[in-house]
Image (cartoon, rainbow over all chains, first blue to last red; front, side, top):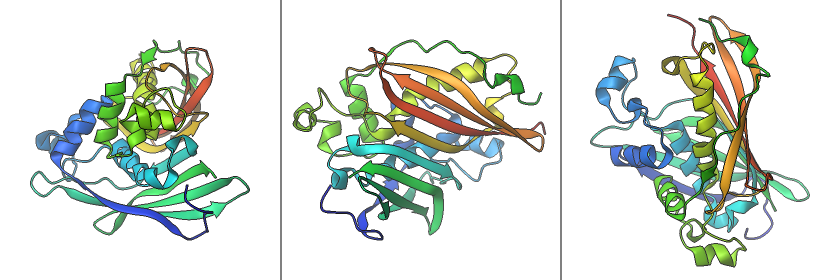
Length: 134
Length: 148
């Protein structure tokens, strides 16, 4: 971790482009083969607006944003999120997910990093917070 | 069938040991866009004091998923996969997962709150290593919809 974290400081940010390939790759890596994450017909049949990114993929790529700032993900004590809005991944154009990581609070030896995770200007994860050892 | 309140406190057997492979860690890291060398390069992980590559934080879900499968497989659970939404997820770590770890997960249903015709189900997976030491507790809150 570089320097003493200051509350409100942005420590990392990035935008990740998701394609259908990203979803298939995550399905294979995680073992979550729910077809709503790769089949348009199944997504439509259950009333979804389209094929959705796995919530756990979004959660995973969000925390990956602070990896190099941390220097060691072993410093993470706790990570939690609430899933609020799904991300529709278009077959041709995909979807962009933007992540901004800010210092939310600092205690003696623990910092809380708040992740703002958005797609098309809408927040998709709420209370996405990482507690890290300073 | 509503979600069965007797799931709270029910004893489940620990899952079979899951051996964390180096290539699996790399594959998972690529899938979640975790590019840092500690997830890919054993030498980079060793420089941080780890015996092998370090799994990204949400890799614990791969092991926790086995406990969720146990829950769904309970014949009297009243939980149908097609009506389940993942509402919340949390991990509390004692240490990161490292390639070579042999991990076992112990499921417990810690909370069940009725909501309309459905329910919010909170389940914990206590993930321990081959020595029995705590690695991570993974908590899922599932929103189970009522019958149509």
